[in-house]
Length: 265
Image: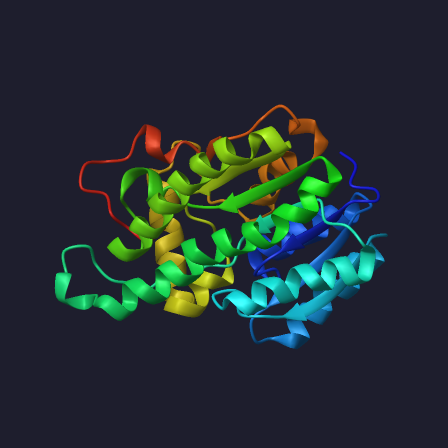
């Protein structure tokens, strides 16, 4: 795998899956725009790690649910390196709510979740398209979820947003294929990152991790590094003849998912 002379934007890359994807690009010689929403210190730390690995990187603070900030990220890549080859749409959000608690979600919840999980990836792709087209090639990787495949996960709003992102991935792959811009999605199952730990606390996080492991055929919980591998494959030239694919990365969870399963993913 080689990202020499290639430039990537990874949204939501100051920690977790996004950080591992950014580090992977840098490890293989690429340049990365590391995006953070509010934690500049975390973003700067990933930039330093990217440089230590032999790549180059800059940190840009931007809430990509705002259209102007999508342009800000793309402009940062072009101003610093003059090209753009890879986009990883990783930034996302949710509201944890039992699926049978219909009163627990309102219009605002859906709007906020869709703004970051669906509209932001679309707006990022729209901003990146002209530069990828000018290169004659480009790779876009949307980070979705098994929630969007089977209607499970942290809330109905989250599952619906990821289902919509999967559909958008297929539509965009078809629309941009003639420009040699590839669009694929990685759909992780439960991943043991701080996203869940911060939401539930250490004790509940441990219980959730144990329950996920118990229902996963491979008897393991994914790490952020486990998800970064497929992301980097789609981003790289190794997958130059692949577009419009939704790759489930869940340790076999969906193979043996029990009836009524709706736990947090």
